[in-house]
Structures are given as C-alpha cells and as structure tokens.
Length: 160
Image (cartoon, rainbow, N blue to C red):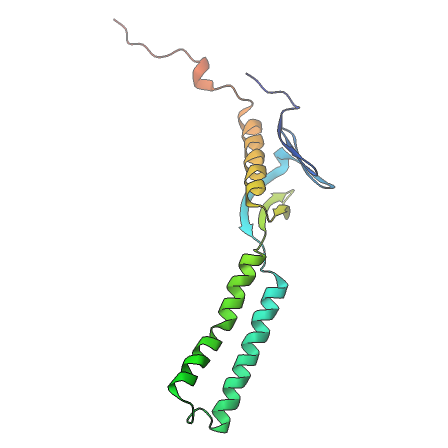
C-alpha cells in the first residue's frame, strides 16, 4: 500500500504531521529539510529555581550567623537534628517544584543548518505521539513509501 502526499500521521489543534510537512502553531517545516532530530528536557521552572535559591541562601545565612556568634557550641543534639532537617529544605523544594511543574519535553532538530526548537510540550504522551509521527514521516520520505522492498522480491529457492 503506497501512501500519497496527503498521508496524515498526527493532527491535533495547532499540530499537524503529514508526509511532507510538520506544522506547530504558525511554524511549518518541510519534513525533508529537518535533520539531526533529538529530544531533551527544557529548563526547570523559574519559580522553583528561585525558591531553592532563596531557601538555600536563608539557611546558609542562619548557619553563618550561628557559627560566628558561637551559638553552634551551645546547641543540643536535638537542635543539630532539626538544623539537619532544615538544611534538606532546599532539596525538598526542588523535588516538589519538579513534581508540580516538571521541565517540558523538547524536540530539537536542524533546519537549513540552524538548530531549531521544533516542538515543546509538558504532556509526555502527546510529545511521544508527535515525535513518533515525525519520525514515521521522515522514514516515508527516506524510503519512498510503505511498501516493503523484501515483500516484492522473489524469494530465493535452491536449485534442485
């Protein structure tokens, strides 16, 4: 079964993948012009990064203040335990921030020699569908259709 130029691999509002074109929003690329496709994760959420930085700075400031004031020698074992738990606060904030607003999944590629962000989504399922659709479209262009070249060949049979 050979596919025509209008073969549609993926279509949702704002995203269309056909044999010839990959369209996301207002951007549209010819599939044959896209090379070096690879995926990655975007940057962490800015709010979470700032929260970790502020929390870490505040805890570091309290630690320095206690150290210079001589307050660390007067602390009990329980207070040291509480300080240790408090020092884990930035890690907890970072983990919760990544759970709450995870980095986006990104599809990058080269278009006319320039590195371009082709597609980005925080929905892992949608990202996988779009990525697979684009790879199928590229394979169609590379191999010239769906037909299996081995299926059309005569099988080898020994001479008897």
